[in-house]
Length: 141
Image (cartoon, rainbow, N blue to C red):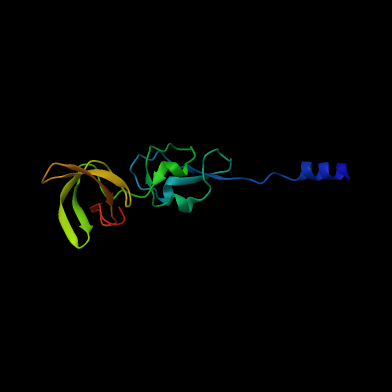
């Protein structure tokens, strides 16, 4: 019986694992398209095998051809660029204040960054909304 189990283990081929790699060098802050990805037959550590997790995402770091793309190397595309002018919005208890601010970092929807109020020159922490506005204080911040 033990010989039969050993024989089956030796004959059974290991499952082939595939990993998504960069088909070419992709610069940081570039949006990843299907043509930017290739499939490697080898199982490379840290990589993913699901192209759906990568297509449409933004490269956070430079991705080199033939190397696996790790999920932490990509993120949602930024809606606010560093030094960009954004609407700075405070909305709480019926009080709505809207002014202009300068983003002090690059951010995607939901990210928290520092924003300088252009009127007062004070720096505040704000959460970026889907429209690119920076929301300060109030519920959800």
